[in-house]
Every structure is written in structure tokens, then in C-alpha cells.
Length: 81
Length: 402
Ligand code: SF4
Ligand code: SF4
Figure 1 (cartoon, rainbow over the protein chains, first blue to last red):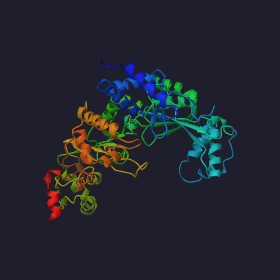
Figure 2: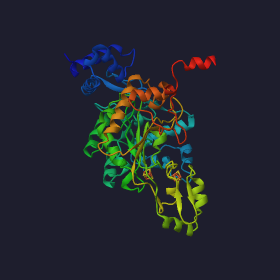
Figure 3: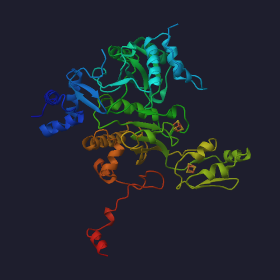
Figure 4: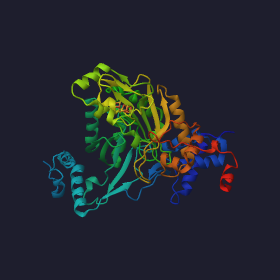
């Protein structure tokens, strides 16, 4: 059965959470990972929808460090109070 | 009047004949403490020859991944009002047409929530609002939304598309640059706000080869107006130029890069099959010459400023398209390019660098485009020459033996 955007979002979130502090993941990395995991069940449109869900719900945020990444929200080192 | 910090070094930047950003910051500092501290920190940077900004990579507005560039002072105790000094990029209107009312509204919002300092416009084209704090980002976003302005692109996403004023003001425009810019901006909202590319991607639209937005050097996809029939000539107007003292042979014909013009004193002749559409003759004799009637655009790909690798100019991908709404052909090729680049592009690799790495032949193959002779890097140089079709298997070995 085809995956839902919510299921893909959960799988992406697990990856982002597990790699936090170890490796920053780009949205493209997540899309590729989903393709490897679910094959044709996770097409690009569905993956994009899942990323939208993650970001709109605040579970993930976009960050920029020479490139754009998806990470779990955290206080960045450079931030002043 | 506000008590401004002493800035002897910055003051020197006000002494020349040109308008000075220091004077503008001083003006803003009279009613805004952020601008006041900005003067102080900048003077300190000049004195110490060291920058005092830290990059903030997380700040933004809910749901968007671009449009806010985080900045923090590394001297927050000395300059507390610029402890946060984030920049917001705002999507400018196509062709930079504003009403004075909308400009006032933007400035009012920024004086309320930020330093009051703006940069009209950044090199991508956006309205740049300089300096605000994290807690003011959402209110600015919301208030700008009420006056129909949205945040633009930054990071690894589609950057805010921009164009020359095109048919709105310019008689040379060969297609409606503003309509295409608006259409692409609306069609690709997701790509603009949710970074998913290996690196940035820019569209710039110029209505004719004069290329007033320098798209050929500054955008990954440069869409430049052109024509495919003959330059329109008003011979009476040509003679009038000559009668009024223009040296047509030297100033027009002598500078034609294609050497395809001739003037016998009465009639101007152009061998249009050799013309490279450079616009020179039309610019010099605007009353006598006009672009042809069969107008459209050339789509070029690959330019960039030097960041990771050196600067590159775009080269021709589609020699001529009529470019009319809904621009389906263009969107199809753009989607194909993005698919291939997103799949195999490396981090921070612009599409032009990607093409160089994988090879033009492979790239064209992957996006489903047949090579044609007009795909030129610049006139008289064709980078899309492939030899596979000319050699039979075994040719190489025979050559070696020979
Ligand atoms: S690029 Fe051409 S059409 Fe556009 S403003 Fe300049 S001269 Fe006019
Ligand atoms: S447009 Fe340029 S190449 Fe063409 S005839 Fe005029 S000067 Fe020559």
C-alpha cells in the first residue's frame, strides 16, 4: 500500500533526530533516503509534502550553514540572548 | 538629537563626492538605537580591522527555509542594541515597480520592527531590510503579508526571480519579462521557500540582448529576449542620422561584431543570417533600427559569480522560444534540470559547475534535449560537439595502429 505523507514525515523525522549532532541532513538527502527505504512508494511529491508537514508543525527547522539543512529545533551556538 | 558614538574613521567615508552609507546610518541613528550601535561597532571594526558579526543559521519564519539571514554581534555587551541584527530579504515586484504608498508602508513596518535601514536592492533583486531581532521576524512577516509582500529566497533554494522592466517601459523588449517573472515566482513558491537544491538557483529575465539585469553573468538560467527574422530598418531615418553627422561606417558598421552590415551612403544593408543579435547597431540608431517582428527569447544555462569555483557565463540551451503563457515548455525543461541536478549534484555545486563535471553530452541526455548547432557558449564557439556519431566502433584502434 502506498505510504502517506505522515508516515514519510515520521520516517524522515527519525533520521533527522538520529543524526542530530553527528551529520546535518539536506532535504535532498532525506528524499534519497526515503526512496531507498520505500522505493516507488515515496515519490518526490510525497516527500516534499512530508517535509512541509515536518516544518509547518515545528518538528524540524531549516538551517543554513553554507547549504540548507533540516534539523530538529535547537539553540544555535552563535545566538546571543 | 541622539548622542552618537564618535566615528572619526567612518566620517572619512562621508567626505567624497558620492552619497555615503555612513550618512544614512547616522540619519537613522537619530531615531533608532540599533543604527546608533551599528555605527559604534562598525567604527570599532574599522579601528581593529576585524569584523564583529557572527553568522546565525537557524533564525527564520515558521514554515520557510529562506529569506532571513541571521546575524549576531560578537560584542553584545558593548553594543547591546545590535546583539541580534538579522537581515530579511523581501520579494520585490517584477521590474521593481512600486507605488510610493507601498514603499512608505514597507518603511513604516521596518522602522517599527527593525533598524529602519534598507538596501534597495540586493544583488539578487530583493528588497533588503537590514537589522532586526529574532522576536520581530514573525511580526514583520505578518505585517508585510497584509500589504501583499512576501519573503524572498536564500540558502539552497530558488532565489527571487528578477527581470528588467521589459515591455512596461522599454521598446526593445522581445517578450514580456515581467509576466514571466511573476508566473515563475508564483509557480515555484515551494522551491522559493523550501530549500531542496544542492545550492542556489537563479532566474533572470532580460527583454533583449542588452541584458540590463546582466542575466548572462548572474543567473543559473538566463532568459534573454531576441528575434529570429530581420532587423527592421527605416532607411529614411538612417539617412537622417547620416545627414546629421553620424559616421555610420565607423560608428555602426565598424563596430558590428558579425561584420554583416554595409552602407552605400543611401541604403543600409544587413545580412541578417550573419547577425548575432548583439543590439549594437540598434542602440546607436534607435530611430532607424528595431529588432525584428518574430520575437521570443533564448534560454541559457550555467552562469554564476565566483564562490566555490570561478565565475562562469551562461551558454545557450534553447536557441529560440516564443515564450508565451503558460510557459509549459520552459517549466518542463526547468523541472527536468532540477530533477537531474538534485539527484546527482554535489553540495554547493551550481548547475553550471555540475554540467562541467558530468559533461554537456551526458547532461543534455539526462534532461532529454537534443543537441543543436545553435547551442553556443558565445558566437562562433559551440561547446556541444560530440564525436560519437562520426566514429564507428574499432576506429580508435585502427587510428592507433596507423
Ligand atoms: S534588457 Fe533590453 S528590453 Fe530590458 S530594459 Fe534593457 S534594453 Fe530594454
Ligand atoms: S545587431 Fe549586432 S551583429 Fe546584428 S547587425 Fe547589428 S551590430 Fe551587427
